[in-house]
Length: 260
Image 1 (cartoon, one colour):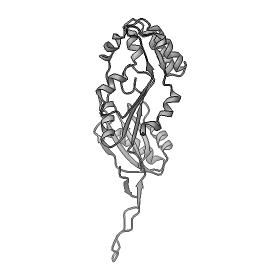
Image 2 (cartoon, helix red, strand yellow; image 1 turned 180 degrees about the vertical axis):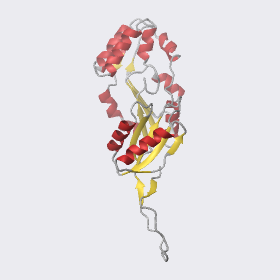
Image 3 (cartoon, helix red, strand yellow; image 1 turned 90 degrees about the horizontal axis):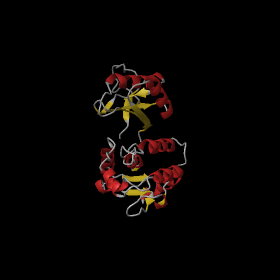
Image 4 (cartoon, rainbow, N blue to C red; image 1 turned 30 degrees about the horizontal axis):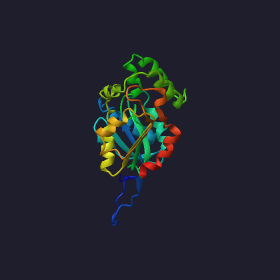
């Protein structure tokens, strides 16, 4: 995205005989983006102005708001503050408002690589929780999932514990759960837009049950897929079915492979 330019000098005093007015142009080298829930589309001009004024209050030079989508997303170019200062200023200015924001460098803003988790990220569900619902264990397994996601339990231990609780569940239950999968709002548009601009999109997931469904549906959009491998019996899921678990430490190592 091109940098915003802003005239930083005061209004020129035209003097007889001068051919031009000396002005200084300063590039807007950073961008603050405000984003609201598309379903509500309640990002209003007053919120945008409050954020802009917060930046200006710390001495930043700001450009005019650039609405990317009315009510949903708006850019404000600025200079003279670093990203952390801008983030803190907006956070203090917009307490409790239903809006997200990010301050980033204008240069290199268009990304070339998307690496995403699957569950509760690209899709709205946690698939082990959905499988547990079929045997009336969803509340119990969801509690383990919650603790693992918050770092209270080791991921591998939590995964093995949850799969063990599903022992005896027919593998046909996987197909039944596929029918419950819904993509996260905006996920499909994000992947499609990035691909249209030449980016690579990778799924890196510690689970596997949903990967097959999403890849089948979006094969032309997904460049790379890495996930935990399960070799389940024909009729039953069992604790011994886990062959390989993709943990966070391994996910980081896979990021360079997404470029390959």
